[in-house]
Length: 443
Length: 127
Image (cartoon, rainbow over all chains, first blue to last red; front, side, top):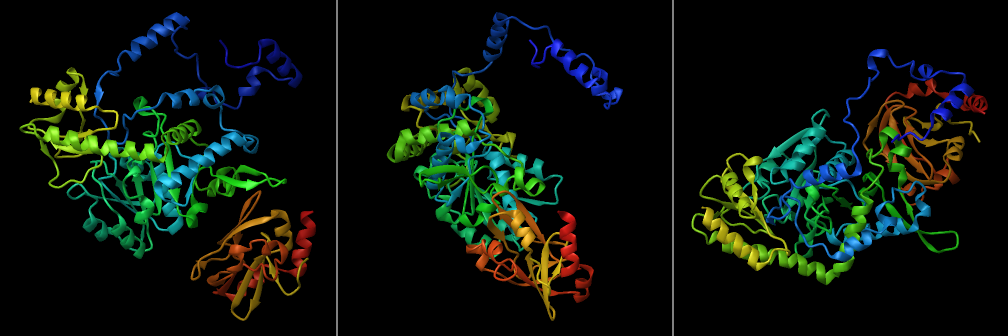
């Protein structure tokens, strides 16, 4: 089935009108750069395609009881979320090119922005970015722009996937990226202060951090501001129901992964990057921003605002090349938060902490299983040391039906026996008990 | 409108020289082209800039334009009024809409740019 709408007849007509041949159109492309026939497989019938896709999806393990975290969590998604986001006017809509006509879309994004500000205690949010990792990268670029400096300090308690992304992006730019080693599961103040100087644009941390540890960056914020630098924190939104917010800590740019707000894990995406900042930096923020205003008849309306930051106006001097957002995912987050409401959200947040605490006690009661950090305040994730190699234990637990935790040796040297276990409100007491039994059995 | 005692650049900035102090703004032609100005990004005091280096940035509803320094120097003062009233650049671009003052590093550079007469001629050529 052709994807180009023109028929052969129409092509002949157009070329005839222009008095050109097909060859004339492509003549400027050197012969050596032209593609030959593509080596594609024969087309399949619908039934064959369905069969093939079913074979592929059968390779997924969707039945395992999930204790995996590391930035992406198995939270409960109410059916109402799917019912609403599945509506074709939301599900199939592309980003509007004449935004002001899509008042409904703009209002939804404006409400999403408002919710992000409330969650983080910040003053301005954008319409969303692609995911938590790129949001963190964009925050870093924002800090470089605001300060005009070129040094970034990032602690290795920040999600390792995000750190790899930042390294990839900055490798070929004139940016000095310094990584500090976390200390006792927390961002290493001493190491950070040693690197911090008046050439530092920003310090990047995460809360709760990759190990699940809770931190208060107020002290860090003070020192960072003394040097005229910015503090960037990547946060786990569900935790903001009960933990101290980035805004309250003095963080300048708060980013994070919004997947836990009603979006399924889906093997890596689509996800939702959020970013919020202080009003004084709003003009340096990338991405779309929806603003509220009045029309000619004084009725409330919504627009895309501060567009002079964006590349369709600023071109190479734009704050970023992003000219889109994760509209459907942002809408999902908005619906999820609206459904839960303040009380429901707080309850969910508390349940995660409580269940994790319960799981921690059940699992560390097993002989040979120890907490990795001496004294760890954790939110809903914690690191356990096993008496043997973690990947081995995890493999055996998969056979018993559990995705028991994440092997930290993949990203951290010297942690071959450690696993990161996450517990959400979705895990039952029974499931936790069964994991404990299974773990004890395989050790 | 092209005040006689000022000097002008091809990018439509004007400069008024008083001793070693240069006051910079954008011309009437420029403010008309930009349309309603919504924001002026002022430089930080103390910032050093070369001749024709980027000094400031002006946003209107349809564009964001850089303002270039007509002469090299160090920013000594910025027009804080523009933070709350960017429209001053539209209303009084040669007076209350001034952008910043520079301590010139080379007063001779003024000779390299256009005087009022040359600028008027230049504007005619643009039409």
